[in-house]
Amino acid sequence: MAKLIYSAIASLDGYIEDEHGKFDWAAPGDEVHAFINDLERPVGTHLYGRRMYETMVFWETVEDESPVIRDFAEIWRAADKIVYSKTLDSVSSARTRIERDFGAEAVRQLKEAAGQDLTVGGPALAAHAIKAGIVDEYQFFFVPVLVGGGKRALPEGVRAELELLEEHRFASGVVFLRCRRR
Image (cartoon, rainbow, N blue to C red; front, side, top):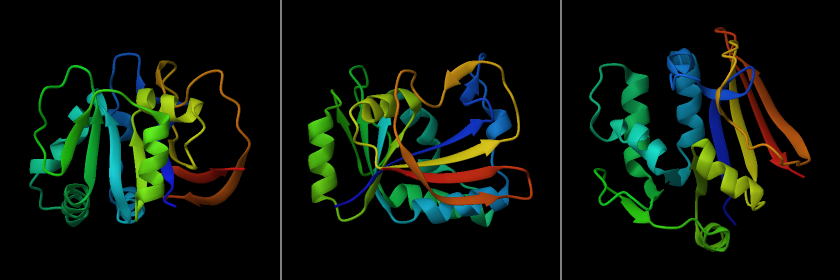
């Protein structure tokens, strides 16, 4: 059975964007980006909320001279995308469909049928999956910055026992942690 993975870049105090909606402090350098590319390469399907999809759709048309950027764009374009939105009428990327409601049971069935892992992107959608107990693995890149407030990477009121599977420190000071539910 495929895993559902929640992956995010967060400040050390646990935010994916600051109180002004900015996340420029989280832009990965080439070393971190190449590592992310290797994590994303085996993913078959990305689950997004509308806002995260609107951020990520950039990768559908980006043209960049950087090999690491081109690599990520190719990886992203090759994966299927499901956007959960009640307001979005159409999508502007290939291999993408809209679902109106997020259902934990439907995602469980998707995991059972999938030949490759799935990711859930964005903290709002991830919160639904985390609260439903269907996230199998957490992959976090912690940036050595405190932003003091904003959008939290993890929902409040959830307790889960996790097992640390991997850790990696980058030259930039970013720390990667990969954990799974016990």
